[in-house]
Length: 287
Image (cartoon, rainbow, N blue to C red; front, side):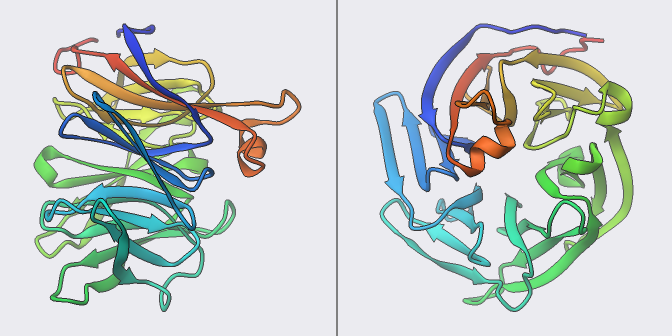
């Protein structure tokens, strides 16, 4: 297993909370949820797009537009580079708050509904269906559902259940139905109770990189085995593949030593960083 911190470059260090990083056409898109802004980081500079409310999970639709989950608005909105418009109104279905999301190749959006730490959450499926997408519950009884990724050529969905400390897998059926639920990797059992999964992304070989929150590391799992890890200073939030053999990581630290990162984030007393780490080894056997 490879460990340690690889060569890296800092992309930003002045965000409040850096969620749902995405790499596209040489730019890294990050939702600063607690800062209520969408931040785009590129070789030619940076652009900040203020938001009237926090956007949590994001992803790119087949049209090239960004879709974002309004954390407290029970809706998905689209961003065309200039402004936001409604993609799907989920008010009739959502009881909690919207979390992370994943866009499938056909434009279907899977989005978390988080209903508290002690109340099971759900996955909602928003499928393209003419001008008004169809909305349905895709999976229930998830313990604080969070980051999502597909593996096995798109046949398997892996979901982080944060406060259960595990990754859970589903088979994706031909109509988008989720079946064959199973534990894909139990972080708490294998690594320790502080390893709670948040954001996830796919390696090139079908493995999965996992941000472990209070575990202060990004770990890579393949075939039920930990094969790589990157230790970080602070709370590990999320990750995504970048360009040129890079992995983009987002982390946060509390600005108040008396507050945990969780507590500080709610008071906007955190500093979040976006870092690109050179990691060309995720298609090799590190075991």
